Length: 360
Image: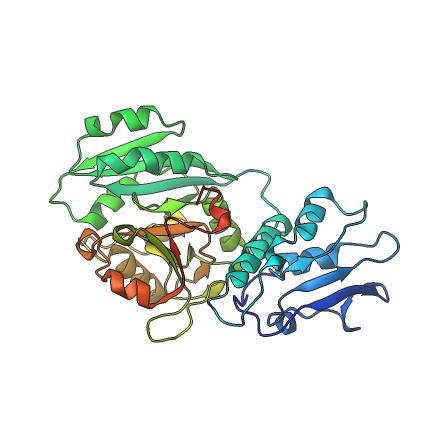
């Protein structure tokens, strides 16, 4: 399917329009729908014809991420599509026309669900090697549990134990239902080299980097795979959009930079969230792997990839939450005040997108 969500707008500039059947095809204002012209709309309200008609046009709009809704669905509409179209909870929030609107978030969640339905899953789930380097054994069990939740892929885990004896994570590994391999590296080995040593053990069709202290929704890997397929990208990752500020016990959502510049998803870019990088192993090796440095490993890898002409695509960040403590705890050295400054939304407690499928 050639239609993609590339160019999706988080904050619509206009209200909804009507989608109706006319002259043998679906139409908006009497004309065949053109996706670029639909991007500024809040969505499309479907007016059903009296009898069954082809749904290909609807599915193309869904694949493009255009929010679709209907008060009812005829019995000739497949159950999965009907359920999504008539789930109108995302319309229950009044849009305020700014990026701070919760309505925009609910609208985007609805769009992602439609994309998942419209872009066909492969007959054979892709095999993904999840690569995680850690020096914090206490976090390994929770990270493995999130990996086990992944849907739509066949996953294995490769751990880089960074100054951590295997005995310190043995119980967590034994309790994991996924295949787990590991390499032990001395604490003096640069972080990037630990990741490379772990990646060398990978047997999957794709490598997916994973950070031990962040949160991932159950469709994180399958959404990355879907985006890579429709974008034709070498490397795919998500936006760094949701942050849990642990000392403040608050969640923020970032959709702009401190400068006020937009930070869109569904775009080709030279930057994705480092904890979400997905790349085929062969391409990873061609690009030289992760640089053997202690910090900014992801940033330097992406810089090198971009310089080498790799096509990088940034998909939605609704299935990913970064944990931030005091700045000294992270390679990304930014104070908590920075994240508060750039917040489009702020909530008390842990409040991820609904796509995370965890209790808020």
